[in-house]
Amino acid sequence: MKIFYVTSVLGDIGGSEIYTRDLLKELIKRGHELFIFTTCDYEVPGAKMFKTKTLGHHAFHKFQGPLFTRSALKEAEKFKPDIIQSHSNSLMGLIGHEIKKKLKVPHVLLIELISSKNQNLHTKTIHETEKFLLPKLNYDKLILWTENMKNKYAVPWGVEEKKIKVIPAAINTENYNTKAFGKEINKKYGKHLISSIKSLWKTNAIGLEYIIKSMKEVKEIHPEYKYIIFGGGLEQERLERMVKEMKLNKTIEFTGYVKPELGEKIAAATTVAPHSFVYEFSTSISLLEFMAWGKANVVTDIGSVRDFVGDSALVVKAENEKAMAKGIIELIENKKQRKELEKKARKRVEEKYSIKKSADELEKIYEELKKGFK
Image (cartoon, rainbow, N blue to C red):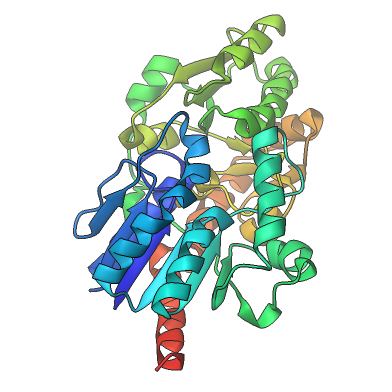
């Protein structure tokens, strides 16, 4: 099948980027012919590519994408797709909308996140954009990552329920080795580690604040443990100042940006992986990765978290450092519980969140829509 794929997220770093990369590679592996129209500077082997011009920080590239709709139309006319898929947000959906109108082929729109809990002007703007555009865009199927997004937002906003399909985010489990060694990480940072792997942009950083605050209590009971934040970004300096003011310098360390291939070693060296969310959770690729590496996770209860992790993680109250501290301490002290969660985490990813399962679901939708247009 010939798929014209429009996306503002694609690469080796960042949750959405990794998901898109792995999904596109899986579709190519299955024999589909792909043309990828993207705002991202990234090449997918085996696909035809068109990279738009962009200016400024990558967070703003999605807003620039629709400016190149005419270019997308030209490329689509030459490619002659069977399916158009626009991915990530309604701004990409605008491009798919216009191609569908011109070429009269099915359009699938995938929206990753809708949350009313927004921490800055950027995310608030995205939310209002989704609210305005989702009921108006011309697509044949809307893919959402969670039932929460469907029931709380899309349907009340006026999207026809029959047009919606929930397919959760996924990763390529073959990329996650559960038998890696973390000795070099332990040698550098310590034997007893609590770890996060996160890009330090605004929303992630606000979530991490609760983990940082929780470490004051964790330190009192388990001073042998250190919390290492693997990842860099604009908010790193602010978080470092916060740690210094709390006098936790010897307990919490920041590594700055790390190479993706270090992930399995970091996970192998980690005892507990905490995840603190301040948006209405639809997914976290960082959480999915730690689950795939078979680690014990503490996650905060917001959005679709409970449905997502089931009994494979310890769920605690959101935006509450005391609850987070209690959860971390519980897993440090209860080795049996920790080992049970490690096994369940990997199993849950394999059964529910593999990229192959996502591709299976998408292929069914593509085939149904293609038949319907004959």
